[in-house]
Amino acid sequence: MKAIIIGGGIGGLSCAIALRKVGWEVTVFEQNESLTENGAGIVLAANAMRALESFDTAGRIREEGTPVRVAELRTWRGSLLARLPVEKQAVRYGTPSYLIHRGSLQSILYSRSLDLGVTVEHGKRFAELIDRHGGVEVRFADGTSANGELLVAADGYRSKIRDGLFGHTPLRYSGYRAIRGIGSFDDPRYPLAAGGGFEALGNGTRFGFSHLGGGRIFWFAAMNEAEGQGASLTPEERKKDALLKFRNWYSPVPAVIEATQPMDILTHSIYDLEPLRQWSKGRVTLLGDAAHPMLPNLGQGGAQAMEDAVVLADLLRIRPAGGALVEALQAYEKMRIQRVLNIVRQSRLMGRLMQLESPLALAIRNTALRVAADRLFISRLHPVVGYEPPKL
Image (cartoon, rainbow, N blue to C red; front, side, top):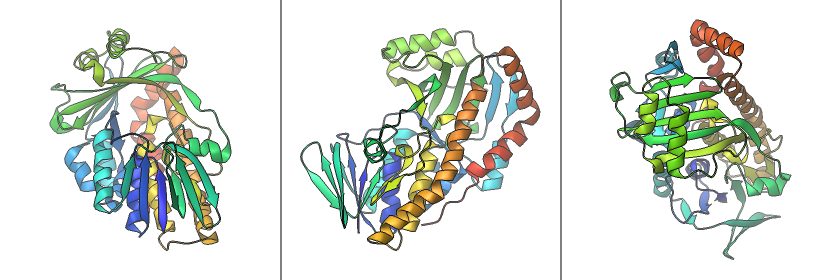
């Protein structure tokens, strides 16, 4: 049985590993000419680490990433709101969360795919799919094609395959823009050995800082703005823009930005998608951001793609054919859609909470965080990070 996967990002490579482990022949088609290691940091909570255990890659994550052992919430002036219960979560779930560069994670998954015998072809831009009786044909912009029994679309939040299957659904703008940076920075208040960092909250604005592994740090900022603002800024202008917006914030915020090279600063508007009620049609299904783009406020985008991959592979373990394959894909979406819908909604709600502008709302939120951070973050996040995907 041959599976075709469109997209060689975190979701596509996770799916390739999972399907290969249950006996499928797998080819991944990626439009970029080579493996790209762009991006910033990604947090891997307990549910993601469980999926990575199934991929036999969790050990490398622990080697190359950094465990999150300190996580503070502060005001933009530096007043402590709460220390999040990351140690309690680590004990409860048997692992801390890890922060790692997205490029490092993708490289680990790519290497594991090749070790398992997955074929990865680069420079393959998707053009068309034909779902025939008995199989799926995919055609590419270079005139080549591929055939298989199954097609998994892992082609990202602007998925062309999703649009082709179900019609175009406009993305939803979150109301804020993100700036993200990678650099080297040392502060005795947040030593590398301790791991983790802080998130500072302002008026419609926030800034986060964490250790990333390999001696690097990752920072992000989010600010309420009109859609598309900042899209045309050069790298130097991005840095100047960030320094201007955060010049009066709690130290070390300005210093973290100053220590970052302009080319290592990214900015983009943040989107999600109204949750779909269907992911599969015939022998074709969606996975990861192609199925459920979500806002990054819970750090679950990559984790949910990994969960998708493990659940899908578990259902396809017996390598069903014909109508049984179609039924297995329907079972996959039935098992996943409600869970992901809840996380999409929670991520949007968390974003609203963190991006508040009203002085009264800010005061109420900050008081609630001071009083009930443990209960809020442990109880509300347990259904998300406490999930145990099937073992492959």
